[in-house]
Length: 423
Image (cartoon, rainbow, N blue to C red; front, side, top):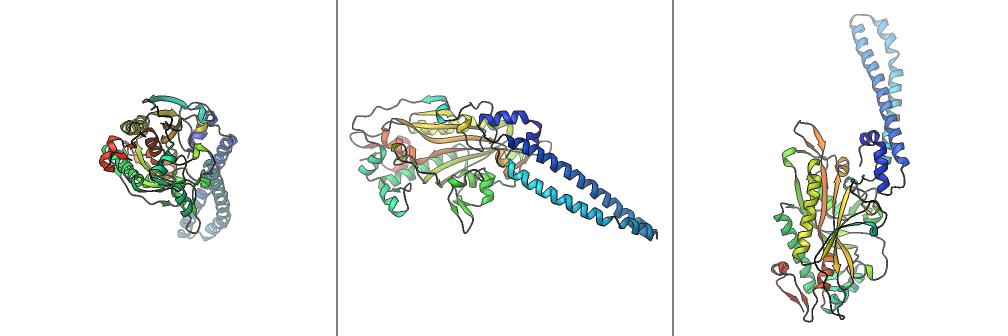
C-alpha cells in the first residue's frame, strides 16, 4: 500500500509511474489527496474543540475549588455543545478515514524507474539468455505423453478425484517431485535462508498484508464457512510471519524459505499451451523471502535472481531472464524478473520463477518496521522469489532430457532421486 504522505507530496510522479503500469483509474489519486486533506482538516478541528473542552474542564475545577460555583456552571453549560461537536467531528473523521482506506488499497505499487512501458508479455524486456537449446529427434514427445509412457503422472486420475489441474504423481514421477523440493530447500539453506513449515490456509488479514486482497479474490480458493483462503504461494504466510513486528536494524536481512503446495483458482483455457503441467490449480513450490533495509533491496533483488539462475544452471536447463513491463507486472511489485526455461518438445519458453521487489508496499500494509540507527522506526523492504515452482521445471526436465534409452536425471538430483534414469 502506498503511503498517503508520498502520494500527496509527489502527485505528478505518482500519476506518471501509475501510467507505466497501465492503471485505468488515475482520478483515484486526486480522490485520495482530497480525502486526506479532509481527514487532516477534520482532525485539526476536533483537536481544537477538544483542547477548548479540556481547558474549560480545568477552569471549571479551579472555579469550583475557589467557591465560584455560578461562574463554573456558566462555563459548564457549554460542555454539552463541545461534546456534541467532538462526536460529530469524530463521526466525520471515521467515515473519511474508512473511505480513504477503501480507495488507497485500490492503487497498485509504483513501478521502479527501470520498468519498461508496455501492456503485454510480448513487451517484456529480455535481460539475458543462458544455455543452448537442445535439439531433439523428430520422435520426441511432449511431457504429458512422456508422463503417460513412463507412468509418472496421471492427469485423468486427478480429474476423477478432484478435477482438471490436479495431477496425481506416481512412482518415479512422485520421487522426482520430492527430489526437486529437497534439492531446492537444501540450496536455499546454503544461501542462508532459514526454512519454515507453514499453514496452507490464511486469513483475510494475511491476504491483505501481502497484496493478494483485495486484488486477487477471483484467483484464490475461499473456504467460506471459516473465511480462510488457500495460499496461492508461500510468500503469503512467510511474509506475514512479520506482520505487526518491529525488527532491530541488526536483525536485517531476514531470510526465510519454505516449501508448500500452492493453489490458483485461475480461469481455465484450452490448447497445448495449458496442457499437462503447463497450468495447474495445485502445484508445489519452494519460495525464498527476504526482509531488508531499504538501501539494500535492489542489490538483494539481483542476488535472489542470481540464486534462481544458479538452480537452473545446475539442472542444465536453458533459460532467459525477463524484466516485466508495467502492464504485465503484479499489483504489489515495484520490479519483477521472470525466469523462463526452454521447452524443447513444445518449442516455447515456460515461466518457472518470478523474483520481485515490493519496496514498502507490503510492509506498509503489514506494519512491518525496523528501528534505525537514530532509534526511529522505518518501513522495511520485502522481496520474494520462486526457487523454484515445480510443474514447468518437471515438464522441461522430462522433455529436454529424453533419449532413446529414457529420460536422464540431472546429476545434481541423483543423490535425491537415487536413480539416474527414468526408463
